Image 1 (cartoon, rainbow, N blue to C red):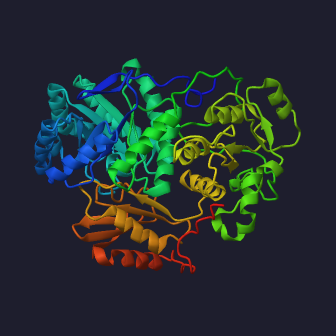
Image 2: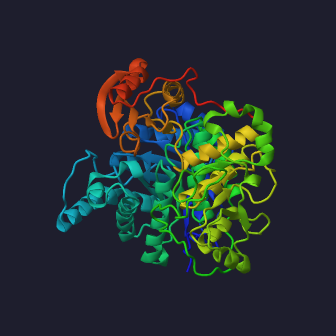
Length: 591
């Protein structure tokens, strides 16, 4: 039988968790939330930012509480909001400080804790734990965590058990590694303690900066919850952490969040952009609108291709040239364009640089197939030679299930061309084409499906090509430019993230294939940078620490010097190349 992650049929059923007057899960719509970027001790700024978020449709607002002093000031923020008639639920974001969590729970409707650092410190230490030693560590966690659970239970405060891929504890890392399984087990340890104390008003999250890791972790969590029993039906908070800014941040968020919404998972979402918080809300609203709950699909025969949904593997196919270039069979994922777009850009091809098309769809000999047409599939699979295939327009299925079904029922020898839309319509609101392509193409690429892509939903020819390549980059299908992992800022941030990110981009955007993490504080530091090659992390006010991988190598650098010192570090490690005359990746002509 085809796995439920591929053809879910309906939205995952969950219990309702109450966050003040807002319900998450159950029969409620998918809720939208965001986080303040100002200092928690600046009451006026926190109130203003909260009101700005509520005005654009934010339903739940999170505020960092790094210390007990910050946590106490949540009372003043709450009092001013309520006095002004704003009843939006507030969430305290806790890292490292159980004492701050206990104080916060007096003033907010929800507390977010990170299992990786709530009761553990992270020293990147290697140690083997015997089973008895490991159980002893669980008891230590219980002693630290149980007081907060009891306060939340007594006051009716909700909780998010929010695992982050980059901040797993040393104990989890030593037993499970830096894996989705480690993320899930870390959260379940805390959930079992909460349940033992008869507390159920909590949600889970499994955030990562890599959409593939994030998707795999949520799918694994759902499978584990289903196996534990029907009363483990807790809601899910979705988000791609450190997605970055601009088009890249939106694409990466859309891939991770949109893919899981298409699976029927997710009860509340937060889009994490390195921008002003109010910019996150329209993106979240658009994702909910563009990815409706899944529909029950016609039955399908036993599939030939059925990947492990918890671990990425690319669908195998034969190598078949496409538009005269090596393609399929594990080759580079190719980018095609339509004849009309190619003709519009034909005189400007030399200026397209890394965004140049690699073929014209109408001339590539791709066979269009209805994956629900049994006779067409039999004829396709009877072919002795492999042929490029794609889903035929007008078949009636949504994009993601249509291509999943094609991949499942077509002989694996046939390479697949992905389309972002299955009809000629390009209607929608501004930004829809970008998010739609990111969800549809990105989700399928993260499933391991797709040997070439075609974007038709963006009407501007040059922009459609840029979008195709940027989706491939964000989904890990093709790396052609510098990748930035940038946190979205909060009250813990020790420098201006937006300005700093822009300066780092200006200095390094020509370093193709390099991944740079930009983190405002140690909470989003070495662990959260995941697989970044180099890191720029706030260590103290006005001071920056530089990392190679997860190892700090330069400390307390004055912020004014830090970007230059980062460039020096990249040089020292042999990863620097001098930029061409144009230092930024060229923008394609819009045509």
